[in-house]
Length: 208
Image 1 (tube, rainbow, N blue to C red):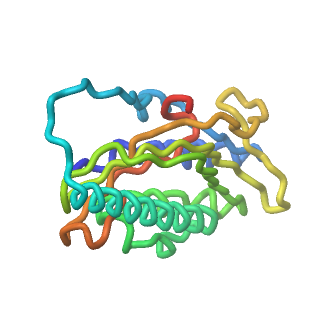
Image 2: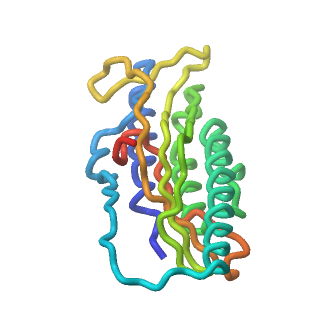
Image 3: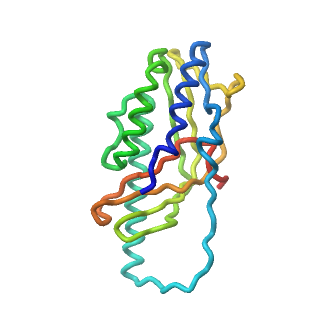
């Protein structure tokens, strides 16, 4: 199982930077060290190999697994958006996220207390353009390539967008769609799927 800590460490830096900048009535959309904390995902096309052609039954099962995994991913991201906005980890959908992912996000939200205390609001949005299944292990794992425009914005207590860059300039919303590989796992032979890796930054991934 892929652990979630490497893909979630940016939130700690983000909230720390945000708390510091808020003291000067501003927030940053991307913390320093973003590239090293979240290396760009490289999506490669597998070489053509002589593998057996899947049966109609296995194809149907795989397609259903991808559909179920996508539904779980969308439910999880919707709950993450609510948790981020309210700084309330109880809003995370535990039915669609692994314990490791839930624990990591919960810890970071708790550490974001200074941002919440300042009266600021963090708004995370993800506009999905496309989701494609890229890997399937029967009843155990699915991998989705998610192409989306993702933004994290900060608003002060008056509703003004105060998101700034690392160098203190006003940050414009991201408009570029980027693709990332998202892994989901199942512990009940594919009856339910849970997000095991999560990328919330709009600056990570390849353009799609």
